[in-house]
Image (cartoon, rainbow, N blue to C red; front, side):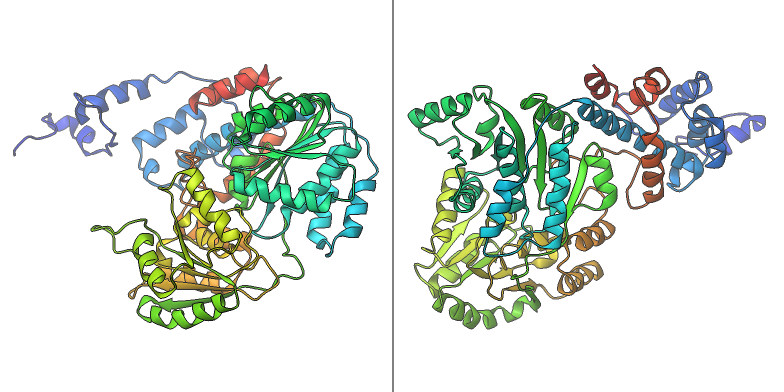
Length: 554
């Protein structure tokens, strides 16, 4: 026998035959030594007072903390994510996460503020609109108004599918804040999106005395100084712009509402800091066009109230979604020609910027060359490697209809409104997740004209890819699609979360452990951390949450 793990006497055979845990090793230490050290630690675990009551543990068939850790190391339970001891570990991890969110929520809700208004301005604006709000928009606006008038501060996220009308709802809420004698700030992630919000605000507030201004990093120094001075003395009621709005040099006279668009990647700490920015009288409203499954909402936004717009505007037509093998791409040229002949616009989306010798995907640069030869002087190209100024220049050209076809990577997937775009072609659609395909599809169908989304795919699709395409063709409900996407792709791979590093669970999985998330949500509601700080201190340290909690308790 070459290099045996153990050489021992016959009477010690049980030690050799038992289940042996495998550990991730550090350079310079072998499996045997690591196992020996870990066994010493496990055998000498202290008797810690459990943070769960015995009655609760018995009801859930959970072991006490010490016995649970021993079971995970000395049995096969750690390999089974549905074993009772593994589920106990998962439940504790979810509880630690939810305690942070619950504490943050209670801290914000304790703060008092005062606003009073009677919706005169917003009702006048509603009467002048060329369309009616959907029932969903009206309900959400009512929820926000109740929050604005309440004594405790609003800390709310407004979820709405692409094109569902979140911006108009937030501007109507802003009108009510102005009526209460306060200022409002609306921040968007890019200058072009901020400018669209500004143009819409100017349009709907044109018949009122509300003073609106626009501030970004590109605002000239002289103009910037004037705007900053007017903000300080209350000469501006609503300021719209990019992250420049919340820089240290910017001081508001009486900021009553901060609206943050497309900022669904904020962490708990950042949201807490944002809530403090405007002082005790400032309410906070986040807007997100990325539908998020319920368990993920609980995990990331449990400190916030949630509103959902679930209907599309009445005049919007459902986007026709078709799928085609890439071998039939040539059939699309006549459709594109018809579109540009009537001055309608087209997106053509590719997964890569340049050709790759490793990946069999279409590149945006190559496709641009092909399409530009067919329709010279009518095609633009945009991708992530371009600098911000160049991107915005190309998008502005597309907005002004100076170019009618835009070849792009996924940089166009969120936010900007192109009402004249009626066709989007997505190459290698099998490469993208459902939620990302849905976001891309939402770049068209923003006007009253019929729009089409064509999903091109390579032959020999996987079962999952076929499922994704079928789901997208069947439904345009972003919330339904997000749930399906999470089940197909797994937690952490949903668009917007993997990229932002928000997968903050080591053991818990919202798909597999959905019941434990729901149980933890109810359980944590009854816990006051200020009273029970000592009881839960070990749990919070164990899952690296103590530092965040300490920031929030003070």
